[in-house]
Length: 164
Image (tube, rainbow, N blue to C red; front, top):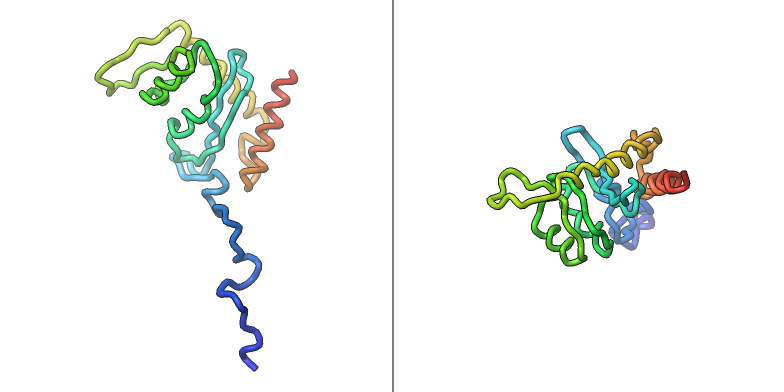
């Protein structure tokens, strides 16, 4: 009776069932970068350094990939970002939303656009947010294997920052 244990489907066992979602490293916002296996937190903060929006991405992801999605719908007079965010698509989106980009140009650009150097010195807000976020050891070392759990603790830490 060798045929009595045959499964009706080609997949065997509950672990092989498809949920339709990505599984593995891509679903957990993990990726290889120069520093090793890690996750990037892309964030938007207000003038006081308090978080407004954030997205998780794999470690090797370019900074510009989620930038337009992050600032979509946020109205600001000035948008401060570092040199990695210098792209025409981001500049156009900021101008469409009625803001002014304060982003230094990259060195390889033919046209070196002007930016407000005095306003750029206020970029400490986002750096301060990441410094405060990394005071939570669980976030700094990413103890959580699941991206949803890690993201939840980032939200919890952000709520704590808003309540201070």
